[in-house]
Amino acid sequence: MAKVRLPVEEPHVTRREALRRGATFVAGASVGAQVLAATGAPGALADTMRDVARRAADKPGYGPLTQQTGEFSLPAGFTVFSFGVAGTPMSDGLATPNFHDGTTVADAGNGRLAVIRNQEGYDPGKALGPTNAYDRVAQGGVTTSLWDPATGQLLGSSLILNGTDNNCNGGQTPWGSWLSGEESTVGKGDGFEKPHGYVFEVPLTATTPIEPKPIKAMGRFEHEACTTDPKSGVVYMTEDNGDPGDGFYRYIPHVSGKLAMGGKLEMLAVQGRSKYDTATGQKVGRTLQCEWVPIKDPDPSDAEKHPDAVYQQGRALGAARFLGLEGAMWSGGSAYFVASEAGDKEKGQIWRYTPSGTKKGRLTLLYESRSGKVLDQPDGLTVSPRGGVVVCEDGDGEDVNGGTNFLRVLTPKGTLETFARDDTPLDLHKWEDAKKGTIGRSEWSGACYSPDGKWLFVHLQYPGKTFAITGPWDQGWL
Image 1 (cartoon, rainbow, N blue to C red):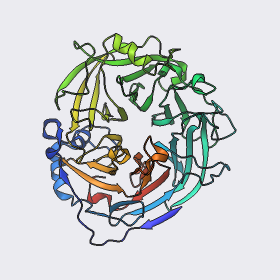
Image 2 (cartoon, one colour):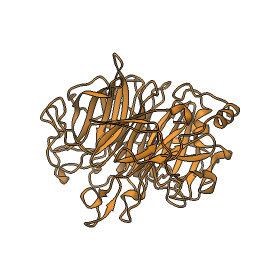
Image 3 (spheres, helix red, strand yellow):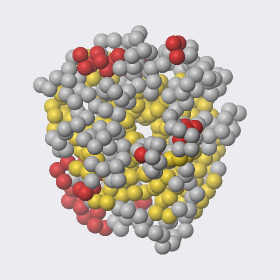
């Protein structure tokens, strides 16, 4: 565990670009403002647009970046703790897994926090632990870390979901669990013992490996994020299969809060526009009327050979095509989600879906990046109690041409601000499909806040390290 306190100094000036120069926003308002105006966002962010404009003028921002952590740069005056380094021993005697990804933070009592984290291990090998493995050769799972914000001390860590594959993203439920999705549909033909591509539910209070039970009714596809409507109990899910496309799904449980008891899986379709393609040619701010088509076989037997088997069922009934769906969150009666590789420039979109009753809804494109210099393939996202939208980049830092990745902030002022820059060289040949000697940067992952909004948790995914950040948040929108 390391602690770095960043001194206040006069750092070099970093770029801050107005989004209108390289992106498009709905009706002249930023995504942050859209979320702020929605009742129910974290911190009761129900400000009117007039209030947002007034507060924007009062915030000086965090200022330019420094390079004091040795791993990434961020503005001066912030305190950073690190823990959960891949390969270090956990309290249960196991090694901390690598590939840190989707994460949530829960109140663990006595001022402590439980950091529940996906581990995106893949390829057949050996399960992370010997106990309660769903598949003894699958190397993904979920860990929990007990962390004390008063001292910055890691008090304990352990494996709580074992023997799953490619646990990428997920989502916290209103009833106190973490939904962890497998971003693969591998099976016995790929060297595994069991089929994969499911959602697993893990109690936030777990400290030892649970008995893993895939919720097959939620679909066998390449899962990304899950976000839950707290009023209806409906779970919305994103898919990241890539070509030929991805679906936006919802799971309607027979009993709210009891997902394993079964339910209906459906895929979003644009009303009157069969097989609508959202990936290109879209107009920011336009609202599309939507409906849902049923997925009759959520657990297709051919999903191992055809990862798009569920997707194709929906497409056959006219469902819409997205591209590179990633993070999702519920805020103020709507689901917000990212299409990382979509848009005319293939640099990313952010969508909002608002249900209208139980059968229909409205889909609005809030944002589309026109330049990777402004925002390069957004991945995970979360909303700060202060109104900013935190976006993890998964862009050219992992490409063979190098580059880097940033933590961006979409503000209600209509600007894109940079909060952190990954400065750690990464041997892409070791972690990605790249030639020897190719150096890039890791992606950011798992951004989320503590329940009180004082701590931002985020990871550098490769090989895996978690950071807890706090500081003068009120100076800006994080």
